[in-house]
Image (cartoon, rainbow, N blue to C red; front, side, top):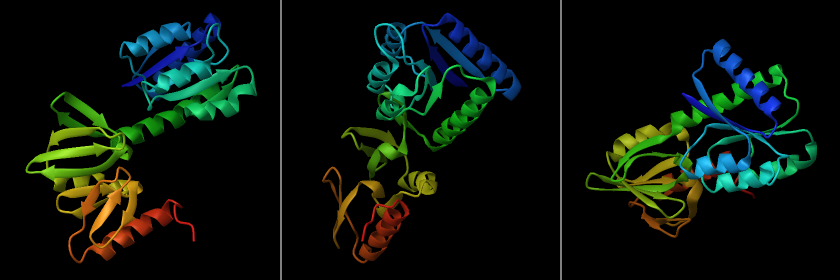
Length: 244
């Protein structure tokens, strides 16, 4: 199920978008639930109460607070929602990148354009969901974006997920299974039987240890330095992080 929301002070524009989504759901046979908001205040109140959406169509020119300002507030609660700005002017297109907008659409939105945007954003949502890790933590079920994971260590049967934010999540499981689960991401390396690292957070490598962005030092077993170094360089070149 996909969760969508619309926020626009124009009742006619809201009705048009809802009609588009109803038609899209029927023709694509997708289960999409949506909520309509008439103001940023209504939208933010719902998000502050814990509501989360996969896709948000957000008008820019609204009374009180414009859509760019609202999106900046939303990012404090949710980094994953795909924000699609709707505007009658291209004036704010550049600013939309500052809040990680998925798309900037000039009004009025036509049916063909709506379909193209929805097909594209849903494909991205599905890909991200496939890559999410679902963890059974002490606090309950947690989903984790692998790109937020700096490294993981295992102590007995306990997996400690060290996030880039500094937070540590604790879960039960197998390092072997976690390594297999993340193999397709192309950015993780098991440098030690007890450690799995995200190569994007590597700060330096010596013959004895890998230093991560958090300054955590991950031990390298004897004789494995070249393997770790080569894996890091291959990742860095692939992601154009190396400049000669």
